[in-house]
Length: 312
Length: 193
Image 1 (tube, each protein chain N blue to C red):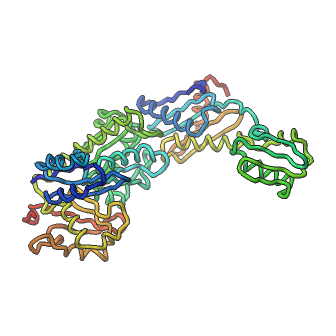
Image 2: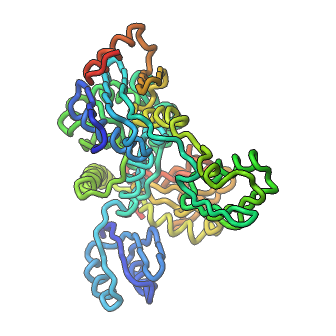
Image 3: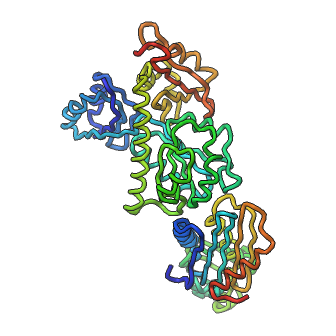
């Protein structure tokens, strides 16, 4: 059974029917937003059953849309959190990815500015590495990007999508070794992206992120995870009641190969390791539960089949 | 860019120059500075790196007086001011308090100020200077250029006066002959020192 990420959008009336259906089919609801009379569910559902969900939700005027970014956590990395980069373009990109189902975090570097002085520190590097993908939103000059890129990418192990002012070909030429994705003509600008041309650029960024994540998914499929991260999310929700007290918008953030649990590591790591998944197999058996560099959160990294020899 | 007579961004990288022209336009528009700038030449060399903005200003029209934003209606024993624009209300009240004393100034609501037992004629009140916009202009310009200049260029040199301004920024120590470069940029705009 292959689970595919989709977004369900419909009225609030009887939306629990759709939620029950998704769960009965073996899917998972990753995020649920209730906006006035509308409900948006970001979920994983079995590929073959999408039509069934469409059918059942038709009388409720619900629609099911493919959204490949559901269940991913994206780092939007900006050289600083100054007015030069915020709110445009960094926030525009972050907001756009969020609209399409991803959980995006802004990472503003302490010393990512300038040319010679640009640098990344260990905390920033570790925080970025906790995400599925890093989108680097850099400036307008080819020369500067060429000069500072080796410094900024030092130690980053997740795929990088580079956005910069020069066109795509120029970016590909100056970055060595190559990164996974490039989007040209999106450098620093100081106005809101509302023209159709600019929205088109944001779509291009999404397409590039989707392409890179697709490649990563294919890699994961070669050596599948021992357990689906979305399943762990449901289990933790059931068995660690403290998660319901967390006020963050997403107390449990699903990633492609793991989960971010927004509970303090010291007091809850042991409890999470002991959560039983099935037949006496616990989370601790199939995943690494490690402290996150983001606040005192917990990161659960699911180990692949080749490591654990179980798939549940 | 209707109001500006000359506006160029000079840079070795063509796309970079276009983006910076857009940035400069957006920032100056946001800060309401386009109407005071007459000519503007920006030079950027990412290789050094160096950012230079030179330009000339228009004559700042006039001082802001009470009559520009309020109507003075004399009545028996008092004078009622009807405010049409709140921007300069606070500095005006401050001046009134100093000049007439707080007991003679009353503000029943946002758009009305009443002066009691004031000896000045309504014409004299109308002529009181409330603010001088050119005082903060230099600060506003510097702030705007700090937004326009690439981030991280923390070594700066700014001069202002005689209706001209120069803003130079870099992340390295500025070269000693920077003034000759600045003079050359003024020459490009057709301005002689």
